[in-house]
Image 1 (cartoon, rainbow, N blue to C red):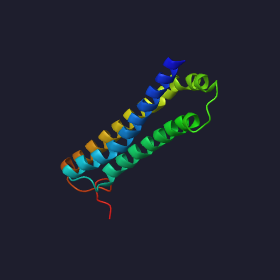
Image 2 (spheres, helix red, strand yellow; image 1 turned 45 degrees about the vertical axis):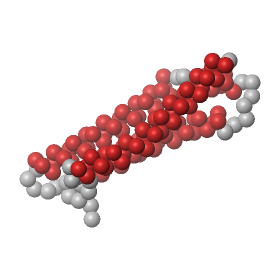
Image 3 (cartoon, rainbow, N blue to C red; image 1 turned 45 degrees about the horizontal axis):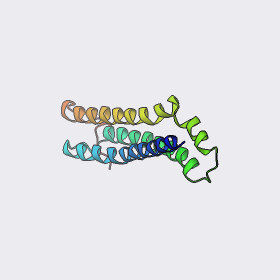
Length: 131
């Protein structure tokens, strides 16, 4: 039982780590976009908003999951209930894969904004700054 409790604390720390990544990644993208002078382009902003939405959904999913166990009175069966739902492939994939999907979308749209700014001769609605 003690090993299971320690493992649960590791899962909790792992989820906090991912939440930190969700919070830190979009501002880094804005800093990089600013260095390429594409921060105000619609194309970049579509990717940034998409990334934030994906991270928000994944973070909320993780928060609700952990909240069920952290904010509830523990009984003799709480740890068994946690183990039954915490270590599923579905849960692991939801949190892990969503970070990489958001990152891929961010990189794709950042790259597209930079490429369009430097390659496209005339501005299009995707490369025009928002006013």
